Amino acid sequence: MRRTLSTPRRLSHASGYLGLGLFKEAAVELELIAAADQSRPDVRAVRIDLHMETKEWGKVIEIGSALARTHPEIEHAWIGWAFALREIHRVEEAKAVLLEAEPRHAATSAVLHYNLACYDSLLGDLARAQARLATACRMDDRFVAEAAVDPDLQALRNERARMP
Image (cartoon, rainbow, N blue to C red; front, top):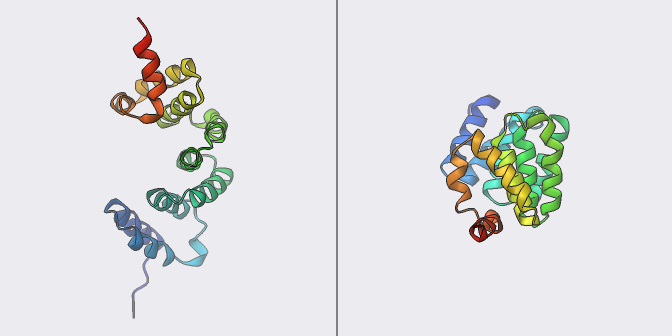
């Protein structure tokens, strides 16, 4: 008989499998979580991670939007939801999601500012994109290198190259 593992243990296993790129195994671990725990925020957050890794954007949108609505303090839900929208070319909607999250998360989330910079760049608001990118880079300097190669920021890089 197989031993029943606790939800935190299953989540740990699922996260470990995700880190190793073993998506089927991660999905199995998530399915083995007790039905009563399936709606827990931490379980849904790991499901978002799984569906982001497997590029199942509709599922990310479904789970991320529901989690953001019921637990708006979970930044990851907003970021995943918006990112999935961007991936299916619904950039204006992605931006709207993060603007809704901004009052709650802007003070602590460099990735929120970075993603808004990307969305502004894609939408042609390069001045706003530059301001957002500067904020993201001040908050977390890893975004300096990322911005140099991110295709979503190409228009912003092109604009900078044209400046004297």
